[in-house]
Length: 177
Image (cartoon, rainbow, N blue to C red; front, side, top):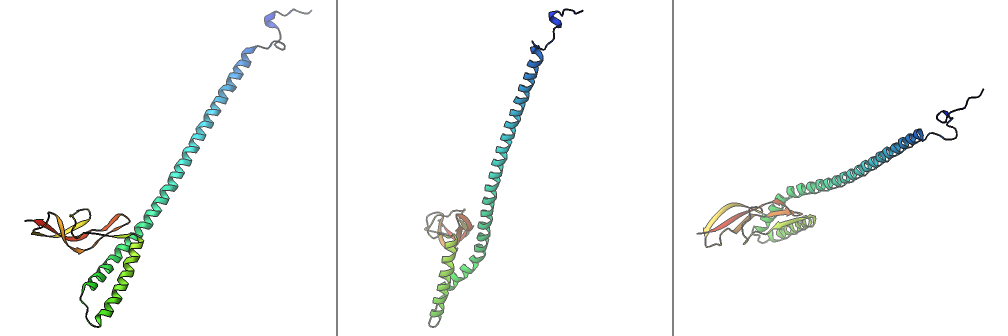
């Protein structure tokens, strides 16, 4: 006794129901899209980390260079009093046997000065210039027939090191009466 199957009860072996297959395809597509989104997010994070590391490396190199430059600046700053002493010694009058001694001191001064200039030291020109509070330190003023705020005398030379003020010049400033 075989019973006839109605069309709704037929086996799904030859005409499979498309609904389960369609939902499976949609689930796989959604999983693929999620995986692609995760991949893009991971790639974006990787690029950001690489950029951060590159910026870090550049910042460390810049800071290392600044530290080296600052250390050199401090060494040169500590040598400025020696340079000042040489300049004062060379201003003193020398007679007789002192002239030979003066020439030796002058040679030592010149060698030291040239080495410091080669390292990046630059003297600040002051005499006859306008007073600039960023470069000069006024320690005295004098009234007279001067152009207002003109430097009349330099007591101690000022210096810059690689474009940065190392020491301001100590000056006397003339003011108009």
